[in-house]
Image 1 (spheres, rainbow, N blue to C red):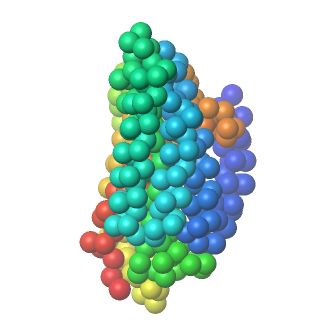
Image 2: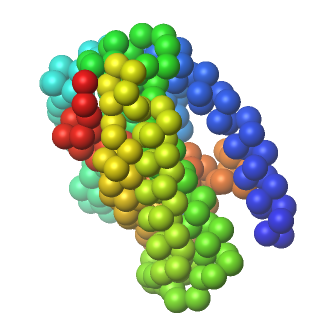
Length: 289
């Protein structure tokens, strides 16, 4: 069983990684379009988890709003401009959800939970994935044009996140003994968590050394990259555990079945939802021009 699961994971990665690199190379608008679809699918999964608990979010409002937040990042290109548009999207979403609660949700249908879960799904998936587009359009790297210069800043947190995830998986399976947070995720171990931190640190440091060194548009020193990798590795594990908590509350093993061996969008991107905004916030303190 474990061998088949690993085989499916490798198969998805063999297709998904080249496709992701190609999309990132094409520029911020390509990233925005692909991740808008991803955000829509992810928001639907959030609402399915809520529905499993007997709640009734407004899927027809939340799904397009999540996609719209990501597309808005592609349209504006900077976090300052995007934040203004994002606030208006969220305010409009809140008012529409409240109006929907008045019309379609009586007290027995928990209108407050319906509205809150609708807004949560949009922020959790749509607002966080928008930072992938903003990283690709980082001002110091050509503003999201076709090429590798800006692509590397987006690929950096992905490498750190998934290096840590892979290290945690293999270290946990081989040496994992002590449970990390069994009430949240019974399969996570302390040993796997430490392995994930080491993997993220090494992966990020090596990436910075090889691809973000002197000669490019921006420079991220290897030691700074390794430190950011350590932070990203820790944040990624929080994101993973947070999604596990949502699934345990809903009583499901996976958020979906879109990706064989990986589950749904939330299962694959749970860590990235956390690491993308954190990376965007911290990078300016470490980049050198």
